[in-house]
Length: 222
Image 1 (cartoon, rainbow, N blue to C red):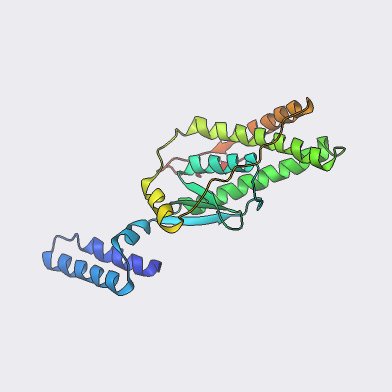
Image 2 (image 1 turned 135 degrees about the vertical axis):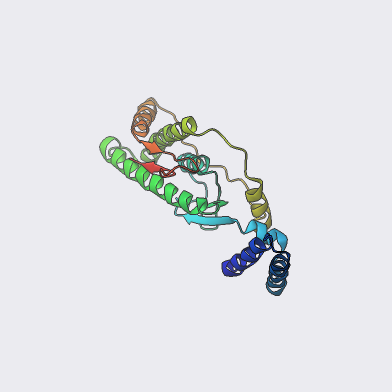
């Protein structure tokens, strides 16, 4: 859908609320003319408020639980929703600029945790076999991500799902199905240590979750 056409239609509809009856009637007629000429329906006009933006993710068939927790953290902080696209990246959906901000916030969190994961493997898991190394690193990441989510949960109360976003997904992304994430098997005593270290590392991440109308960043890491 051409955003320029949508903007023109919206400007006409804004003018249609003018106190001048003749001007309002002309603007309304022009809006309808543009909608008919470009095949824009009333529903499409309303759904044009919804935007999508994508962030690079793990690109695996079953994403790890820690990746899902990071995505849920961003969704809660910024009032968006997300799904896995065909490349298994994270597509964020929300009103206005919120989707673009969410994709950036996820990318920052994802890079930060990947870097801490690599450092943890180098420091604590370099002697482990590959499969065990991945499992224990996943345990570390799950606890890290879980701690960050708890921080956002304490800052921002849960909000009901946006019905306009739901309609957008039903209209433009039908057939989305739930993908069961890959959860780390916490077997063996040493995974308790991995979990504790992950929680401690996650607790050191300082978040600034700005609310609507404030001049703070929506989700900043320090």
